[in-house]
Image (cartoon, rainbow, N blue to C red; front, top):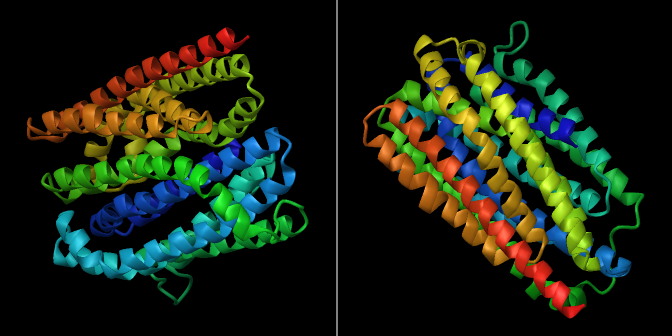
Length: 428
């Protein structure tokens, strides 16, 4: 699963690296779209969390038929919700990108890119829901393999559609989005064929199941989506602040955002693969195993992120040079890498605890933890850093916010788990 997520996130960074060769303006235009792309991802992840949690709990309780009905319901619901959101974001693009600080020339670049990018986001969401079904049933191999396959397809298509071939000059910035559309379409075809051969979906009794499961589904998906929508809001505020520092800083911030997701690959893999196991332990009432799984995951996350962050901080000038040919963008990106990458050890811990909380029946508390991370830790520190008037202050503030969020999430999770285990001992 980790290799699959690495491949998936790697092709996102590859997109930005290819676009950087088009110039600073297209790279900055792409960076302005990241917060809204994260908005779509936030909703799909929230729905995916609910899929994995409810289906894994049903399987843990021996309710296989209910798990099949839930699988069908969430696929239909997810396709409708994300399709409507993509249409809305297309209609209101002009005022949103203006508020984010994009000038008229940048908005013209965004307009050509935004339609295929929204289509790619919708197809990616459907593919993600399919992956969630496989993970809920304990199969993480197929999602991992398909992530690798789709990333390789995107890697091959990117240079062809961006730069062209022979006399054809390619589509430039929109070509990156069309490459992603084709790659995700390939993945969807394979997932659809595999699902057709599994008895994981059912059409009978969907209306009754919808009435029965609406409240628990919304109880998990609602807070999870709100929690996942907070990072895009924070990203919008951050990009608006960065825009005041110039186009090169916006481009560097966009590359750093792509590098962040790649650097957090182990964390993201654990947030997808760990909840189904936690959900089964939850269904079986095995809280001692929950504690062991969480402690192991935390050791892996913190150790890996500290090591990776330290290495990338040392190699920051060379990493920046590999991602951009513009000296000013390289300088800003190297600065961001040195400050932000080591701080992802505690950011990853916070992400892991929020994901685990959703699987363990604490969706509202997980949402509040996400809110605390962004609005009590990250954004205040970012604002204080921005008061210094340069990118150094901004980067230092973001790093401090990540450190505070991780420490807060660890204390929160330990307190909740201790209370749950104390109650279990008293009932025995």
